[in-house]
Length: 347
Ligand code: AQP
Image (cartoon, rainbow, N blue to C red; front, side, top):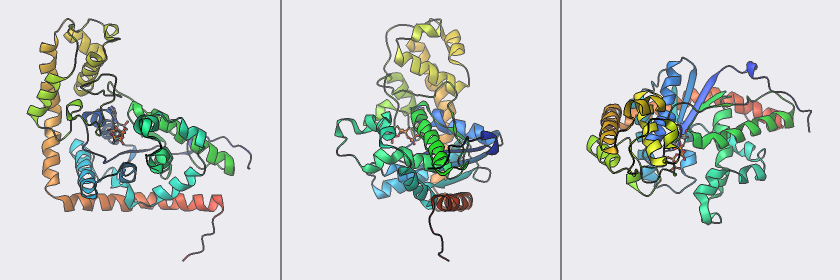
């Protein structure tokens, strides 16, 4: 094995990559934890590459027709939320084969012990770990490939992805050390904002998730104004009014969740929200939150619906994005093949 080398970060130009699985309709959690941040990063003028990670989605069985629909709907959500396909690269993962090629190589770099510690796998597999797909176990190594096939340096994600990004760092460091190169950057997670972990509306200790069996647990980006208002009105809370400090929400996960959602949607801090609503009952706070959520989400939903009228145009955008993504990824993966000793003689 080669001598360990340091990976000086300054040698990698800033580049953002992130993705969302089309494993269902996107939720308010995906919007606040990821999509809204993706748009902000685009506006900062850094190179941004965003992806519907359809190869990740199939780690759990997906109906093929629904998968296609969900991939288009996800792409429509990106654009409706403010991603400009001319300024950001927007595509679906399976159209750029570099991801799975590097994913396999990273399966040979990542250690079983590292993968076995991934809490998302344990949560998703639950007591059924003998029966879930091998792909679900290998998911974080493909995620590392998604990021590193672009040598991305920064990855905006929700809090739930932090451990996977730590694994991505470990894979990059081990690859560099094993081959004595300074090839991959050690990525920085970008986990920012008031709602990095949006919780279920039915259980404040559980993440809001698109695959939760209860539709009442989440707000979907396709929900209409009435549905959003109804779900917020019915969200689980406690009988106490809102306190006058954030500390007062310490043991009140459902209340804390609604305050965080309000803050993230309004662009305020949770402290500001508590200041404005100190002493308010949920009978007052929930309608205010519902109005705010509708005001912020309705324009996105309407635009998504409009874009979904023309699926061929969405496919065209994804295809064009994939060609641009491939132009970055292919030379990087080709260099990886050279580094690891593969013969590349095909013309
Ligand atoms: N509840 C959440 N709060 C904040 N951020 C969230 N994200 C997901 N849920 C929340 C962020 O959205 C991005 C895309 O996530 P994903 O869809 O690829 O996978 P996930 O994290 O497993 O999301 P779901 O909704 O729970 O999907 P399923 O149910 O299919 O597993 C990530 O940046 C994630 O952090």
